[in-house]
Length: 254
Image (cartoon, rainbow, N blue to C red; front, side, top):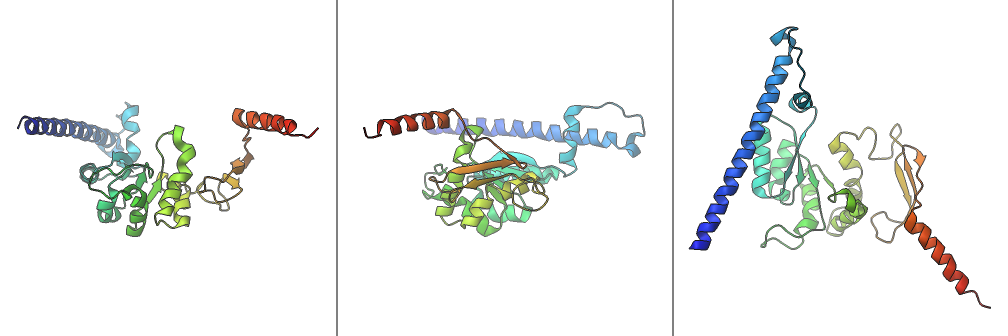
């Protein structure tokens, strides 16, 4: 009974903390909207001259020009995020989305994209299928939900192709897996007119590989950013070349 009481108390504390956080967000949006209204010439004439950079940054969000990114993984978090965005009439992008497939229909109707932050992870619930994270991309694709694949922080960006490869191994069409780490992120962020695919008029940002870019054994031969060739040499490659030559010399027959 004590254990149950402790669980109830912890649950109440989480709910109270969540309620206060939402109230803080609500207040911020209300203040930003009041600031936007006060700046309208027909409301204040030319007398309004005070500028607050905090609320200036919110104006594109309130006007629907930029989305709000919300970290949401669980069913409760996703439902709360969508409800909160609807209440304030804001565009939203879900970041994380481990259980987003359960609300695929809702996300499709609301046109809410999902940035999957990891494919190579464990299921969130103990009763979930072991391959739930691996098939998340496929399920969102089948439901028509906009999505892309990320891999956490910058330190793990080198593993991004393997996240997409795992999704492809579990049913996501291979061309969709490639788009999930190239074109689709650009579309969600709003820079697809410049990057994300090889088309006339876009930045010449591309890689040349010696095989399938989703395969671990593939090497990048050339890298171009905005048409400029990038030097791929580094300390580790220089050491590799140095000692490869040394061992070759040792293998020369006398």
